[in-house]
Length: 270
Length: 344
Image (cartoon, rainbow over all chains, first blue to last red; front, side):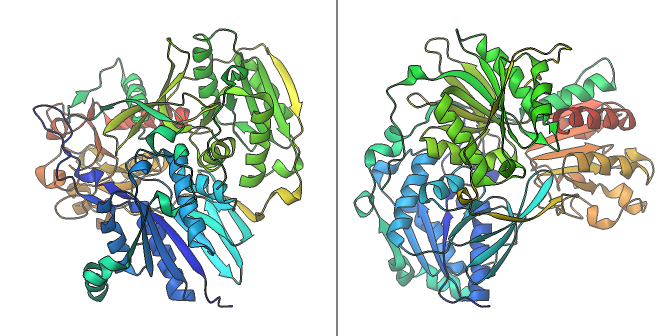
């Protein structure tokens, strides 16, 4: 059964490209200037999934981001890939919001958008790595969620979704609206077509970007931004200054292997 | 708009440290015992607080009793037939209701897919803060607040956060990072059965299939972890060991030129100038000397580990961590250490 008029909102975030992260070798300080910004990788997979549903069911795809004016770049990229409508949430009072405050702002914007059937989000942003915004948005909108989506089928208003954990696979059936979070295992994002790029990056493309500020949303600004957030950054420092080769010493292989495993888990690698 | 944050004036009503335990087929997840270990450490820096473990499920009394051997003050087991299988809606409601009722000051969970699914939702429902994927936790001696530290920006930034004005302070902690609490032969502490108020109307999810997962399919260029073998393997059978390590890490298998040319493994696994360029978070080079052609395909990896017999191998100059030793001795020990940290 083919559904018409399905409406999908994709939440995307512009992040610094951490693969291009550079350190000043003399001072050990992170070089921020010229650090390129990209669409968060998991979010691109979320957008691809929405566009796949657009191809299949003629769904309408709305890309939503919050950030500085520079974040228009990711919206243009989303348009070039095939998003129908793009919205930037931009207000100085929103800066410094933690994940819960961000979810609250996105929820307010989605309420303003009005009707929707599905929200797609990346599982995790590669800058902050909180992985919380998706589930918190679902909670604030009071809709069900499926995280770590691996398979998706839609019949009428019903979604059949398979999610993974480390060791198990669950398939749930549920009615829309629903929020889904995805990562790069789900699909391979499309490359924008030449036509798509031309349309997105010309003057008409720029004009298509809607910009909403605090006054456009039903939101209590006391509850968002750096002051309104429930969590605060206490301190930050750089970890990986330079590749310093450390040879792991130990009595025997067992001891060396053990300290290596310890180091790797301290670094969040295993 | 509904109010998101709950500004609380009654922070002193919140006490005790909770560990939300995790079970898998009745077995206690190692991260639960690690969190208990950390919880005991935190409690030493706080006066008058208790350490409780919460487990949820159906028929979990046995597991609750097992947890009494780790020196906690109380184990609460939340039982309901609707909690038999994972369900976001039921799990979130059961845990949130219990938190609202008992008011813990700190709630710790493992950074597993299950807890990362429900943790943020619970925090949002309570209107409090959650810091995810922490690798270090400590109590600020000046005001008793929990300082939560994590790695972000692709492993480049270490940042600490606090949740000053809301309770509980919630955190998910990476498995394998904290030291496990020691098991004692004798059981201690109290045990309490909690029956949550749940009905089928509380969920919108209908579970139609639950399966045990076999190995994930990941491509070499997308893999977060790559384990590669080289000349030092000496024979095709050496890749069995490389595969085993890759499997334990949920990573992919790579190779340098020599094994490909010797026919020990298919050329699709080749990393280097000829072959695939990889940029995983972790690259483990086993028995690979590190010729410049190989380096070209992997030097952008976030972290590089080298295992090689020859202390003068060039790979040791570009690695983060190196072990000089026989890979046939080191890798089995490494597999065992990782399993101890991560697996059931």
